[in-house]
Length: 615
Ligand code: SER
Image (spheres, rainbow, N blue to C red):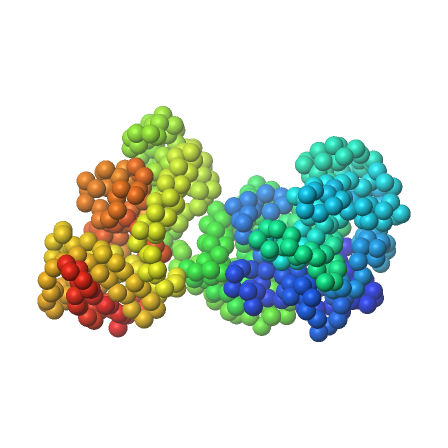
């Protein structure tokens, strides 16, 4: 059964059962700034599940576009996806479990529905805990329809559902399908769980019986009306009905893989992980752009940028002919446009935004790969011994491997993800020291967190591209002031809004306009000289010794993360401890204009204040 038929079957079935079909909402929730994306079908219905009247009535059904990013690094295996479609239907204070359970059983097993084999189905109910009792009603209903030994009671992790810590929630019943060749037949609970673990048996959907409301993780009351919130993984249904191994072999992707294979020199069977990542990330990107998201350094735009950059890396990995990008992208539009018509409307925008982002990333990538080659050469020449002794890091760990520090630099400076570094290293016959790479990432995170606390108590008015640009110039400003006025100058405060940056520093007399001009020139020349901005992990003592700028050193652990601003010739413009949001290269600053120090005044005893703008 083709994917379009499955969609149609589902919606027709529930329409016949008096459900109104509602459209999928945008991937970006319209009224909820607290979440980046729609992650479940019920999200757009939360107010109605809490009691508000829905204009379309009490019985609704749809297929909803969803995006989950928490498992983005896992994509590439058989089952993880970022973008997916969730099949859903709801009873808002209408029917409850007595009707829902037989209704779903009918859909799963009848010819009007998925027509799945009854022998391969298993079901679960909630076993009860201190928050909510065992779902005995659901068990009784199930017992009337299927043999009792096909129903298992499981704990809250499996069979109690809520969207988060607060909101409507309830016990649920889940539906499972046996995908093995011969069929497993009746199983004990232990056997059932083992086969689930092995993915012989997979969950295909769940019906949540919403009757409680949660606040901050605790059930606070019963809902006025009882609801049903059903959700099913559309991609999984396609796998079952098409009898294939993974979603990538279904008709949701097979045409796409064919285009990739026709225009690259490796096929799916050989480069299966790269292929899967491209499939997932490109499809998600197409849908994100159709819903108004554009690549940027912030929020949804940042996720889109990440998806696209990872896609490009893997497209290069399989040597895809990028001239065929239009064919590739438009194939997704064609596949989905009947059900999601805005794809066709946004077709040109999708192509132009993706091409632009690829061109931008190509430049970084070019220097990144050059650096990578150098590192591999040195690694091989030095008999693969790590060139830096990190004290706590055992240099022996680095043998036969690109050392963690080099991998970390490739990641932070050039944006090469670890798995690409690993792939590329393996192709050249060396490994990668992941352990130390991960250690450095952890140190960076911790150090950034401390610097953020130290520097920005109320001082950053958001995290827009302009605020990032202002914040980055603040580093250059401080470096310029120290260079020209002397080493006694340190940061004493900072406050940044969309309009201007305000910066306080230690110095006890008025700064003349000529000096300010010189500082301004220092900042602007760094920007013009195409500086790169990236972080480096160092021993704290070594950082101090090398003159890295920072205050409150005592708050930092032994290893610190230093932001470096450096041009292509290797000139360093600033090195400072920091954790704020930075741009990655000067072009992101120059788009706002030239940096200008507008005003200089006294702030308090021994502290001067400047206000700066872009003109
Ligand atoms: N809300 C439940 C889920 O996301 C059922 O729709 O799985």
